[in-house]
Image (cartoon, rainbow, N blue to C red; front, top):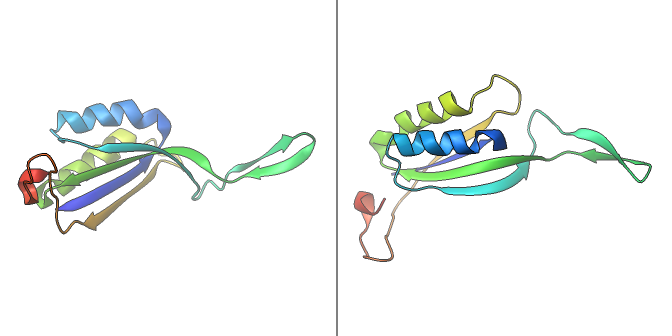
Length: 112
């Protein structure tokens, strides 16, 4: 099993959510986050003083899938979230040792 974390533009939230459900992703966690990468933010003025705003709003999707689903999910995320501009986001894939469904105590792939 793998955990896929995708950090994308807020404008891609609904299209990406729908695209993931279309390929039968059974569940996901979505969080509003702030961060910076190559965009590095911008300067604003607050009460006459210059302030460097170096974090931007993003949306983070967290999805746990079986190993055989990973490449398909990555392709869906890239296709849906990509605009070709700096700030499109990143995808991180990490191994998941175990999953347990609390309601039924099922574990492993069936619990995903």
